[in-house]
Image (cartoon, rainbow, N blue to C red; front, side, top):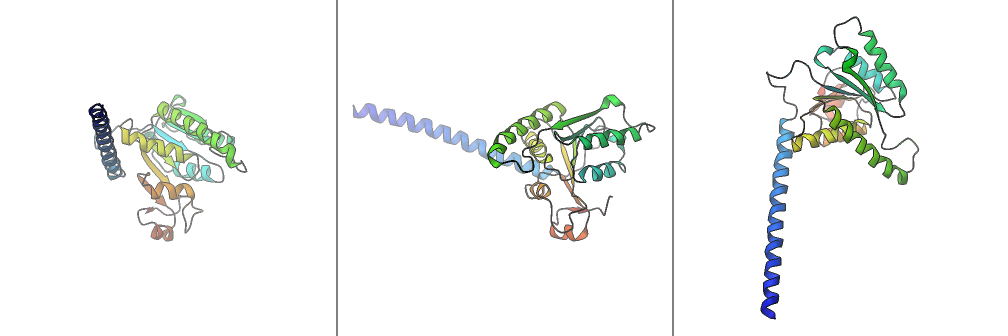
Length: 234
C-alpha cells in the first residue's frame, strides 16, 4: 500500500515538475520577446518597405482632433493610405471634422474616398460614470478595440492623447509580441501639456509602448528625456 502511494506521489511530482519547467520556459521566451520588441521599437522602416502604410488615426474631443488635423496637414498624406479615422462612440464632431479635412484635400492626389474610413469605438468610461458600471463598459471597449485592430491591422498609429488610444496601442503592442502585426505607434503630446504628460502620454511613455514620442515644449522634454521635442505644431 505504501509502495503504491509512493509511486502515485512520484508521478504527480514528476508531472508538476514538467508543467513548472514548461511554464518557466514560456515565461522566459515571452520576456525575451517583449525585450526584443521594446528594442526594435522606434527604428526606421526598412528600405524595402511599402511606399504607403495603412494608418489608424485616433481623434478625441477637447482639442485633440484640431491638433491631430493640424499635424496631418503637414504630412505627406500619400504615404499614409488607406486611412482609418477613429473616435469615441459619443464623439460625433471629431469624425465630422475629419471628413471636412479630407474634403479639403480633394483637389490633391492623395487618397480616394474608398481608402478612407471613419469608425467609432466604445469608451471605457464616460465622464461621471460610476466605477461599478465602468467594469462592464471597459470589458466591452477592450473587446471592441481588439476587433477593430484585427480588422484594420494598421502599420502606423497616430495619436495625441485621447483615452481611446490606450486600448488600441496596448493591443498593437501585444500584436507585436505575438507576431500578428507590427504597428509603429507615433504619439504627439498635446500642446496644452507644458510640464507634465497627460495620463495617456504617461502610460505610453512609462510602458515604452510608443515607438516615437513627441512633445511640443522644451521643458517637457527635459522632464521626459526619451521624448523628442518638435516645437509647437499648431
